[in-house]
Amino acid sequence: MRKTIYILLFALVLGACDDGFDELNVDPTKPTQLDVRNKLTAVQLFTSGERYENWRANLIYSSTMMQHFATTAGYWSGDKYTWNRGYASSMIDRIYGNAVKNIQDMMLQLETEEASPQMMAVVRIQRVLIFHRLTDLYGDVPYSEAGKAVIDGILTPKYDPQSEIYADMLKELEESVAVLNSGDSGFGDADLFFGGDQAQWKKFGNSLMLRLALRMIKVDPAGSQAWATKAINGGVMTSNDDIAYIQHTNGPEGINRNGNGEVFTVDGSPRISKTFRDILEGDPRLPILAARRSDGSTNPDDLIGFPNGLDLNMLQDMTGEEDTNNYAEPNRSIITGEDAPMFFQTYAEVEFMLAEANIRWGLAGDPAVHYANGVRAAMKMLEIYGPAAAIADGDIDAYLAAHPYDAANGLEQINTQYWVATFLNEYETFANWRRVGYPVLVPVNYPGNVTNGTIPRRLTYASSEESNNAENLAAAVANQGPDELTTRVWWDK
Image 1 (cartoon, one colour):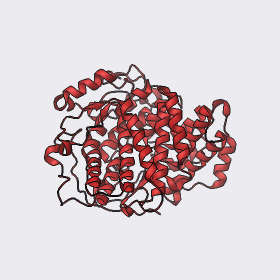
Image 2 (cartoon, one colour):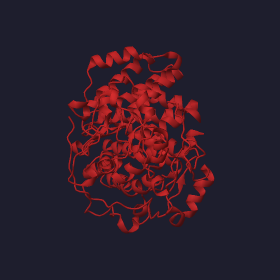
Image 3 (cartoon, one colour):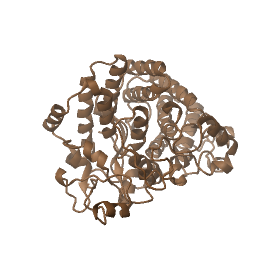
Image 4 (cartoon, helix red, strand yellow):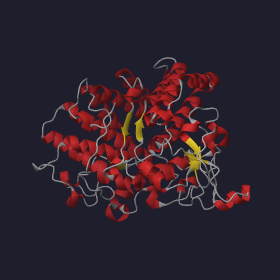
């Protein structure tokens, strides 16, 4: 069992990209450096994220665009495809000032202290996790020069093309997993993901490699296959024991808490989308993930999904209802706690990717077996939330009997299950949906939307960059396309 660690923050939360790093960064060459193990704990918590970006980028935008949630609240911009620039840039605003800055500081400290290659490998894989989320959400982003204000005096980092970022991230993963074996990496219990276990980091690195490989399927099919093959041969996750997640706590600092959970504490407006509810019909996960707002009932007959793209006036015109209390919301007794786990990559996702790799290239064995393994893993992993979330094996068997693998619709079926399994990790849901287009989501066309009634394809950059880093921002826009919700990132062309 993982050991949860309470920490006091050692790093200030800074602004977008590298703005102000020259004043606020700790000089990494001074002997007063904090232990690098403590820094990994903080970086992992920053990767999980605070309420700020989880509320805006993960939930307000990604979860509703992907129709896991729906709401009448006008400030939930993703539900209506409207543009709130501050919300859309929230992840890029926050992550550069904490996770990126500190991961770069860690790498320099490990070099300076001549730490083991295994410790550096762990940090490099963690860095890929941070940056792949950023680039998948925004496209071209500061990468090679990011977080180096104090280290190299770079206050206005360039925006690297996403194709180059992906090439380097895959290289980083390949080189890192090559030096990992077994035993403690050197981080021990300070590592909130795997308690320092090298073997699990190796599986995670290869599993991330598989994720990134499949991301490239539209733009580089040959490269996608080659990297997927390398990842599978290197050894990916094999059970729920390998899941990359943090078990959050209720304090003592805010960053110790689950950022999604902090949102649900203060915002009662999201409801389970009708799209999500309909796909969960007959699924034993439904009463674990959802409950009726009015009385907390988890009886599936009481769990009504709410359509996306409505406000209260539209709801009243359509149904005569004046509120949404009779509709299902996220189950507050199980999944919305501030001490809930936060998932980054799961064994279920890996099994679905293995099934897809077989369909596309004949890799990894029978896709029907991987499909069933993925569904079972996705249901069994809910036990991490606690005993109330446990699903009996017999119920899983019954679901699989009623929903067997269908080779004629394999990619759709597998990726629809992937969409279900990544509920609450909406960054990943959004990225995978853009990659494959499954499940087929019906867009909304709310009055005043900025996408002409199409589902957005990315989020947008920070307005502060127009004054702080204008030349590099302009170069990114010239390379990628207009800084709009409808512009597609490199791998989504």
